Length: 445
Figure 1 (cartoon, helix red, strand yellow):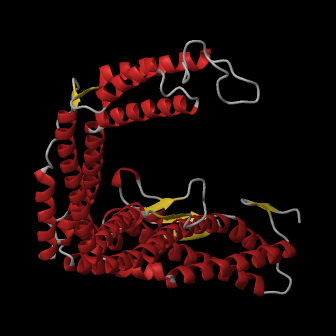
Figure 2: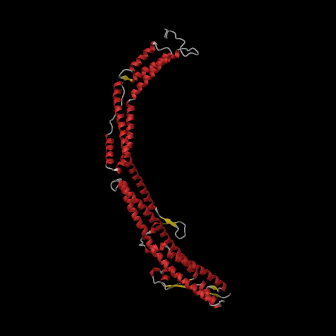
Figure 3: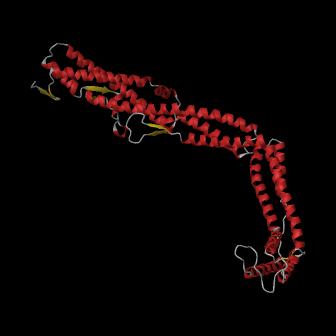
């Protein structure tokens, strides 16, 4: 067709029918979406909730958008109905009908009146609202899609937070109540134990968190970066996760207290045994020190300290805590005591080793002297006058009290050197282990 109008060439019948079919399909899709949004659980919750903060602001805007959506949809429906009525007048539409349909389907022929027009295009500086606004059907569909996506995004985000966080908070709160009851049974209370204070803080935080999530869910929503789909993102569980970890730490602390309650007596008995062994070792070290001072001359013997009374006092306090079922106080005390008791036993053993070191040196010198004497005797030189004299001198020093270790060690060394020289000077007969003889010396000399 060659006729043209304000909107361009006049559409023919086939173009009109195709446009009506397309617009009808879009109308059905928009209607389905609007009805789904109207019935969305999140939207119903938002309507009935006492909202605050970001959610209150965005829901007010979303409600206005949804109202505007329905106004647009009604105007769109009316224009589409009018176009269908014009097309239905005649089987073969006249040129006037086609021109009217072209204007309606392609031109800005849809009028949105009153408050809807003002909401769609607010006047600058708060001036008087527009009485009406005109749109083409294509523009109207685009605006409806934009408003629908923004409204749905807000509704889906709020619903996602409400679906995720309150239920998880309630489960954690139930676990918190059970933990508090268990903590109370073992004496873990606020003001008396750090875990009790933590439980009080977690309780306050969870109560406040639930109130905030219910009234302002969008404050706990993290949009997905780069996502344009409605509801793209996830609930922000940072605060919840932190308190869940804190509660887990408290549960471990209470488990430790419970473990103390179960085996406290055995641990206290073991502590008594370790401290008793340390005391006995220190007593042995003090006795050994007196023996060393009496038997060893010219040597420094370290002083042996007495057992620390503070550990016995703490052990008595632990027994008292157990008697009065103060497990929360007993738990850290036992852990500290067990470490200190092992350290004390190690210190006592080291003290005994340090005190008895001179006796060990004397014993080593005695063993070395006797070993060389036995070697010389095997070779037939036990009666050598020079060796016998050196041996006897060293022996008297080592078996007399007090023994001067430095002098005795020199005497043993002189005996060793003399024995080594003697054995080195003796010729050996092949195949025999003894001496072949020595001029002027030996058993037969």
